[in-house]
Length: 112
Image (cartoon, rainbow, N blue to C red; front, top):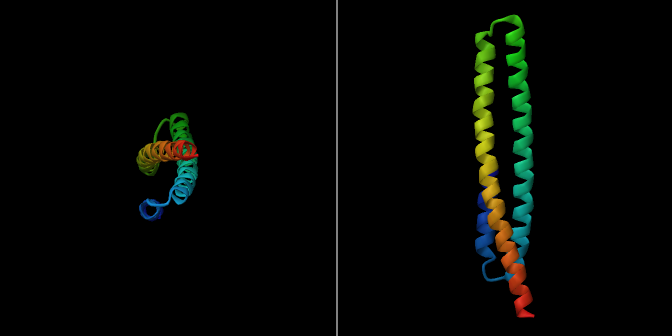
């Protein structure tokens, strides 16, 4: 679903190339979306770390780890890595949108 939204923003940005106000609006909305996604994936990472740490703590207390627990910890680590990649992606996209928005604002001042 996120990829579809990302593609939608890209298509909208291309469509707004000739219209500076529309381009700035799209950049602003895209920036807000990216920040929300960063917060969402960071929250997911926190939950996954908590699950992983809980399982590890219980395994230490018992002195062993079941195969199911091990598999769950490995899945948590896989998902944490995926979330880290997505945070990086949306971070870069946020920087690009922020710079584009700033350039648009500066250009609007120069035209006045």
